Length: 302
Ligand SMILES: NC(=O)c1ccc[n+]([C@@H]2O[C@H](COP(=O)([O-])OP(=O)(O)OC[C@H]3O[C@@H](n4cnc5c(N)ncnc54)[C@H](O)[C@@H]3O)[C@@H](O)[C@H]2O)c1
Image: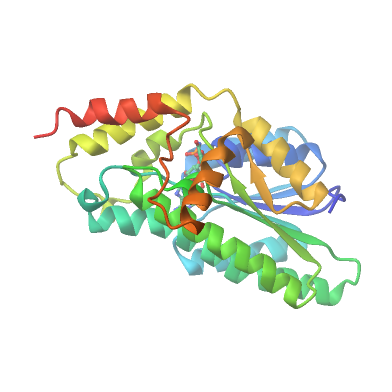
């Protein structure tokens, strides 16, 4: 897909990080924007900046955990712009720690945003796009789901996030096959960033009140937080670069999008261990300093 001018892009989690950069990129290509986020003020700011730059923008506060919100987003997008061509199911949050120490609320929140958000995005928007295709023989659409290298590696002390992102990879690969099965004029990609400097390490700040707990933060959760902050902060690939790579993949009609292809060795080792029935490979074999951060943080554990 390489025609973007005048087409409509929907971006969830558009107020910050990679979502914000995808919005910049889409605006630069002359696309109309539908921006969704749970944070009202940063969303309004993003919308203002893009409007000032000359883009047509519809910005909606939308909690992607909720199917009704995503449906309202789709209905509003069609009411305003008549069609939807690109959908970025990008909104996401993070939580870490030893997998047995995460609370029910941790699971509900992270799976709610990272997995259910993408489920709702796929469920609602694919149908909208198929309707668009039915009324326009020249229609071409593309759906990008944001997973993570975490969904391919299953690193320690990141269980909730790994589960959410592995499921997004599964959902995306299935979507790819299903769209092919029906010869839909809609393509799909799964974006698997490694560590990228965004606000993801601070996503707990906009965790909904009903899913906050007064559970004490464990040493493993603090260690995972320190690892995420360090790894995200020291990454040399920017969110803007990831947005560019993502649009390149759409143009070239590629399914897998990686920010750090050099990290794929660990994915190959995992797959090799799996097919040969060995123990799971160490996801941090090529990045031992990250494991050191975790180990050091765990030492204070009572
Ligand atoms: N930054 C990384 O290192 C990294 C690595 C791999 C994958 N990812 C994924 O990339 C995506 C974008 O994250 P980012 O790194 O740009 O982080 P970010 O925190 O800068 O942006 C995420 C955005 O999602 C929004 N959001 C959170 N919950 C929401 C909800 N319920 N409904 C709607 N919007 C919601 C946030 O308000 C925020 O604006 C996420 O899916 C994340 O898991 C990030």
